[in-house]
Amino acid sequence: MGKMTNKDLLIGIDIGGTTVKNAIIDVNGTLISKWEIVTNTDNQGASVPKDIWESVRNRLEELELGYDRIIGMGVGAPGFIEPDTGSVAIAVNIGWRDFQLKDILEDLAGVPVFVDNDANIAALGENWKGSGDQAENMLAVTLGTGVGGGIISNGQIVSGANGTGGEIGHMTVVPEHGAPCNCGRTGCLETVASATAFVRTANEWMKAGNAPNLQLKQEQLGMITTKDIFELANDGDKCHYSPDNGSTRFSVSKCCCYSKSFENCRWWRSIKGR
Ligand SMILES: [Zn+2]
Image 1 (cartoon, protein in one colour):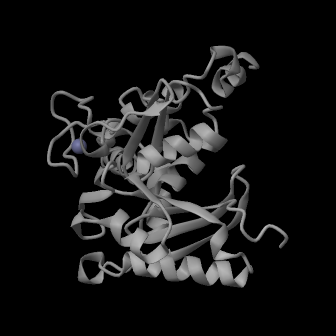
Image 2 (cartoon, helix red, strand yellow; image 1 turned 120 degrees about the vertical axis):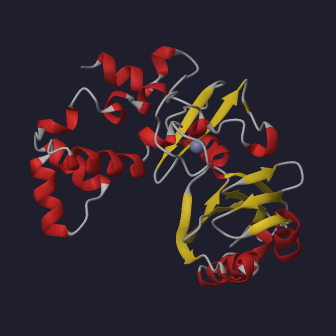
Image 3 (cartoon, protein in one colour; image 1 turned 135 degrees about the horizontal axis):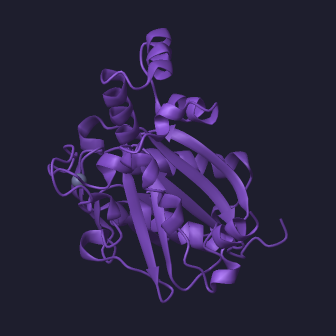
């Protein structure tokens, strides 16, 4: 309470197609509060910035945190972003097209706003407080419905064209007869290493009669998810490690960590400890 005029708080926003995840942190990166709101995609997502700012303001009031303590806001958004202008060229899941996200949020909040591709922001966060250990050079891989990535080189995020410099998900890894990808091409990394790819591959095994336990689970549940596949694999269901299964062979975790020195890398330490 004593430092009314000291700016010591940061707002972090992760905009997704279903939810927006918000956080208040201090300058040391300590989490003060985090919560989610629903992404309203009506009207091409026009109300999203207003929804975000209202929710942040309410939370600050609830926690009795002075608005004048906010240094700025960092925002990750999906799709093609121009980091210099904070303009979203295209975000399919939200409906934005040439959407001036930074300008709109700065007008609402009255604090500086930084916007970049969500995978780049994830890489920055992972480098600051996560497994990156503040490395000078790092590749972060985001795995979920799709495959994303962010590259830090010489301490700087590699933005590339429209913030997609680290978008590794659409590299071709299956040059012939690859599965179709959301981007319109075939055989992208995302078609073999994402959650979506796991389920599709599992369905192929079941069709071929190679995954009886999984089949049983699907009949019980009506559908299977990546979680079900991993649970069965953990229980020793060997069918999931058939040599044809590119998903398990491509171990993304192994390319996640290029630390200041290899000895400081958590992945390397964990391998050495085995
Ligand atoms: Zn693709």
